[in-house]
Image (cartoon, rainbow, N blue to C red):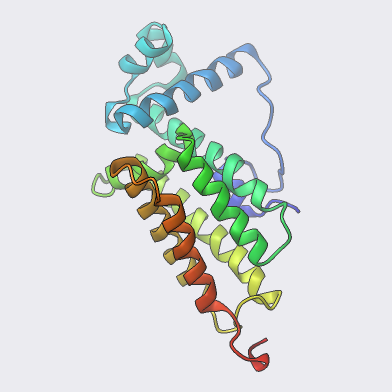
Length: 224
């Protein structure tokens, strides 16, 4: 299906584009590799530990060379967040959009998200964990992350709304509330799996999603 504007913004695409542009030059490819290393580093150390100097040391580049690519620590952190959001969208959101609309698509989104967490993929982990690191650090980096999470909430709500149109969920079910509830479940999953080492974290998350979906189902023929 065509990619919608909320997903385009997560992918960093311009309006109307459905695929990320390929790196055209050696410099573009170098920048992409640096940003991927930056996502992995920030996933380990936090965005606060990411700087021109630390990333230069990580990739074996001079600080002046790194500065030429990004110009400031803040610009680097924003670019790394953009890369993490794009990785999350590519691995979690876009594949779910290929699944039939309605409950199957919701469940595909959830399973992709759980797999991202279980496999500790850097983009998904940073995209989730940065929300707690930056929640009280005002500035452009927090603003960018806030906007990205708002786009994710819009995407979840839109996917759920497709289930209403398909008759899988009640007409009065609230897509925005479902998006907020699902995000809370997934944050809890990351907490239990990553910090508490709960081997049942994924199953607990699936059970919580089942409860959310069951609560949204039509109860009578008249609800359809």
